[in-house]
Image 1 (cartoon, rainbow, N blue to C red):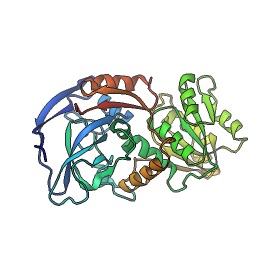
Image 2: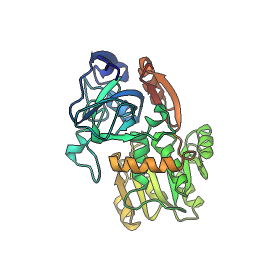
Image 3: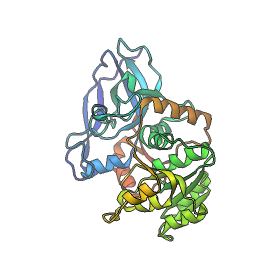
Length: 349
């Protein structure tokens, strides 16, 4: 086996307030502990949480944090007690490294990468062996780096207490990472998808990915009424809700009686202070569920879906930036010009 690297470059957030406070530092590579795996990180994908932490609107992390949670890489060394992984294996780490199966809890949440614990925007990092998942063979490292948060969040939403089934109708908001995976997983499951966006160009991409109906919410502000019209008054079975306070009221209106609303994001800047959701939630018998990513066992199940439907579930990568241009990657994410995921290529070879 070739000699292990001795140093790793990584990003650190000097001060909360802006992603422009990220800077590159260098440290020694530590040998993995007995139950750990040392991974060479090839690619990292960004999510809105990464941006929100640097700005200070997401209450975790802080000065000194190594950012980002979503990575794909290659095993280069294992601890003496590790039997499940070997050098050369291609892996992703789960968002919360101790979320193996079942519900999460406060102790598991403390292991959430890039916020409650140090992140993955580094050339080399050790992970607990139990936190890793094999990458589908047909995906590149850049594509696979989009799976730990965006893909698994969408999968958890649609395969929760009331799993998606063929013939369902799913509403996805916007064309970011979670919404695009929600669209793709819904199509792969035989469901019909309604996609919303403020951009007709982005909606064209959504249609190419399989969306049956699209709505420009700038042109049609009462998009919930349009959803009801499309569904002949029934409403949708699932809503992938990424807007938050500004959109959840309309999502409730767009859902069918007995439907599911999966609360995932808080992108909307509109005020929802006057929202009264209790009565409509009761009267429509809705399931409103917050999604905190997912477990390792769900990750494995999701990868089986991806393996079985490679064409329908190919990750949508908008743009790839070099490690040195990570700040530019954050700026591109902030611009909301992207469709799908923004990725940083970490490895230099």
